[in-house]
Image (cartoon, rainbow over all chains, first blue to last red; front, side, top):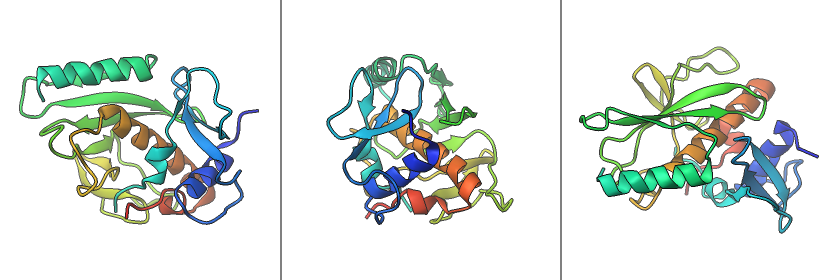
Length: 64
Length: 141
């Protein structure tokens, strides 16, 4: 089932090393779906199809 | 940007996000840029502008092609660590994506696009929750 934006936000927060939040924890990956142009988070190792894992771009942080 | 690098960027964008129509503008001038649509997870559509002057050797400036407002109604037109923004140009909200210290010519426009698209999704979340952007998006060390 697709996750809501709230849950994705908490996963992004965790992937960026910011606390534990209420997402699915560090065992998730952020995936960019090239068909829909949307982000999804999935359990590590469970990616299927043509989604691209972009977790590294999140975990490296943003400027300022 | 060299023609070879431009072709490479176009190939990567076409391969990684074939459904997204990227429009390169004024490429033969001193102020080239690219427009790229972003659809957030809640279905709202924005346009990202990435200025290509000096790219890839210089960090490209990236914008949402409008002046966004925070949940409290403040214009996002200045440098804000909490909201990951920089001072406005073109009258647009400028997104803080890569820092100059972390930028290398090896970073592709696709990566910049992904960070901007994620920034926009977290902006939508900010509008919903009221939490600052840096609650979700960490700062580069």
